[in-house]
Image (cartoon, rainbow, N blue to C red; front, side):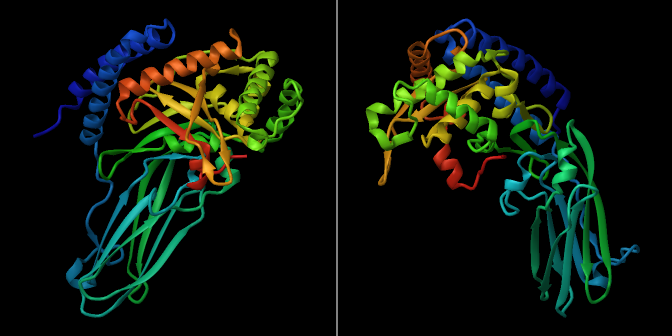
Length: 401
């Protein structure tokens, strides 16, 4: 049955307005009693987003046969090829961290219908923005090979992408013996480097792919501005020392307080405490200030402040975590780690209170949010997600700078 996209978009629009109103009530007006109502509204919006994604599924590939420009058919060339776009929105800030097997840009399937073995070469690239990804393989009769490719992007060209930019993916499939060739082009969007993608739509499946773990790349403990600010935080500590877990469990929280107090003294101003976190079209993005930028501008929303404080805690060898709930983010830190591993015991702080409250009050609010949302989420990661930096680094999600 055909999907009525206009009706889905209309319902999605109404659901988004309801969600945003509830997020403001919960996070700006303190209406924690409405968390369950918000979760139900979020579930409705997510369901509509999934339905829209499936409805908008577009096949950018077609089954074609390799025979140069004439495309004479499998009976003549013995080869069939199908090329599909897997990443319609390319997050330029993070694409260098992706793996071609889990996050390919394109996927090309080639089948040999001839009795003799064929030597095949698959090439893909983004015109003007990347090198060529090349894979060569042999196919025996009846065999199908799928090549997943993610070209390497040129840093200088990517740095120029400051707005959502249209680009072209080229895909070539060559029979190295017969010289026949398939060449297709597909349009993609390049997402600016100032944007953190939270999920992207796979156009070949209509399914959303979660990218929230890549927020860890925006935690940059080694950035010069962050390292310089650590000295300010050290001065805010009673004993002028920030050495992570080396000093014993009871001395960890005073180090977190020193970082909080130093940021408070800097005068960080909070703007837009409720953020979108909503899927629209083929991607769900969030404008993010890198920690160095936040230190310079002294403006932050909840994500910016969380990433900044996480960067500072990681810089002093603590294990912070990014906590995500619908429309909001705050910070956690692991209370203790030693040579045998972590404690998996966490404390929380609401970083949006930097400008208005003392550390103990911000911790009380963070602990309350964590308890309320863990209870309401009942284990569903859509509504309470704690992304520990130690886990993200182990997954290969390294700092952007």
